[in-house]
Length: 77
Image 1 (cartoon, rainbow, N blue to C red):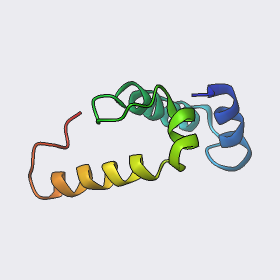
Image 2 (image 1 turned 120 degrees about the vertical axis):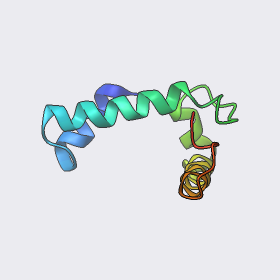
Image 3 (image 1 turned 45 degrees about the vertical axis):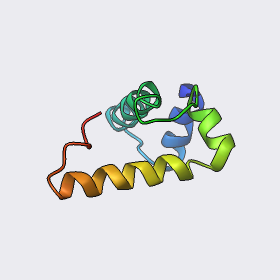
Image 4 (image 1 turned 180 degrees about the horizontal axis):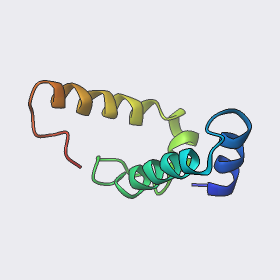
C-alpha cells in the first residue's frame, strides 16, 4: 500500500483526523496481509487494483459478510 499517498488522499477528502486516517490505514494493512488467506495471489493492494479495480476483493468481502450474517464461520480471517 502506498501509505503516504493514501493518507494524503484521506486528508483531502475523507478522514481529516489523524485517528480516522490511522484506523483506515490499519484496516487496509490487515487486508493486505491477509490477501493470500483470502485466496488471492496479489502481493499487495496496488496489484489487486491493477488487476480488476478491487472487484474480486469486494466480492470476497461481500461473501464473508453474508456468511457472518448467516452465522457461518468463514468470516474469520
